[in-house]
Amino acid sequence: MELKQVREYVDLYLEGKTSLAQEQALFAYFSQIQVDESLVHYKPYFATLARLRKQHFSTNFNPIKTSKSLQLKRLAVIAAAVITAVFVLQQTAINSQPALEEIAYEEFKANMYLVSNQLNKGKQGMAYIETFNQTTNKYLKTE
Amino acid sequence: MKETLNKSLTIQMDEGAFLLRILAVQDSMFRLAKRLLTSTEEAEDAVQEVLTKLWKNMNALATVSNLEGYAMTMTKNYCLDRLKSKQATQLRLVHFKHDKAIASLDQHIDNCDSVAQVFDFMEVLPEQQKLVLQLRDVEQYDFETIAQITELSEGAVRVALSRARKTIRKQLIKAHQHGIETGS
Image (cartoon, rainbow over all chains, first blue to last red; front, top):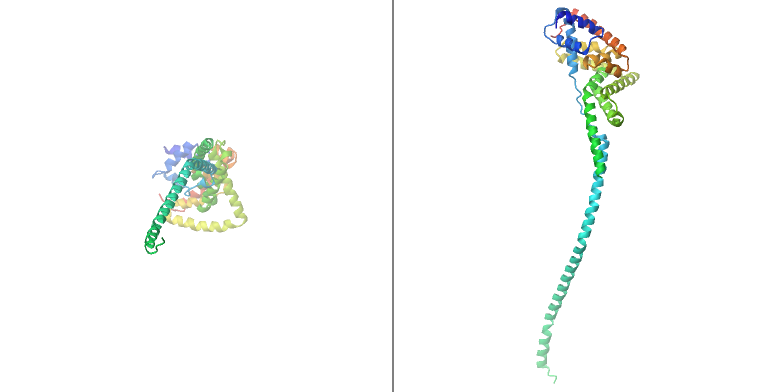
């Protein structure tokens, strides 16, 4: 940019009449290393602007904690979980009805085997009575 | 259930878009808050507070076309309120001294360049001029947006801007004549 134009822009700038494009041109001019001696006092101001524009908000904004949709989502998830739980429970109830009968039957069978075994054992235990009868009959002649 | 899911999904999308829009302005909001409140911590708190407010009112703000301008206006109002309540409790004086100490430290770190000095020039401007200068020279908003944010007329904005720039120039010339290094 020519010096004459820079001066013109600076005058407009001080009156608050420059456009954003003109201000950018001024900014570019004053960002150069070499600036005309008569305007050099403006340089620190533009350097300051450059510095200020680089400031950033460093904290992370996290709105999730207050999110309404999350609450909705949670409700949806809970509803889905309840519905699936009810469904699964019903299914298992239907499936397990014959299974229960089977188990009962097996248990009954096992019990009956046990009873029958015990009876057999008892019967074997009684076998000596007959022998006893035979031997005693040898000594005690009842006839 | 499908309906609820779809609904929450669209809300989620809107939230994402909204978040992107307000997060795009957060740096500008922070710089404005810092200009007005001076302290970085307070500026961060202020931005956090304003962002939360915006977020909570998302549904009402969905129709606002210039959300950026709206966010900046809220930041400005919030900071000015803070300043008022601080002045009432005289906290400002304490804080000002505290910040001065930090500023001088910054100055030291910046290898004593004149940038820190210009910070001081900007610091002592009247509130309105400070605000307008920040919005125009740092944030580079057009006059219409600045008028919206500051709730002034465009003419008043130009006048305030011109005064601020002239005050700064006066101080720049003075500093230059006193033979202070410009740091270039």
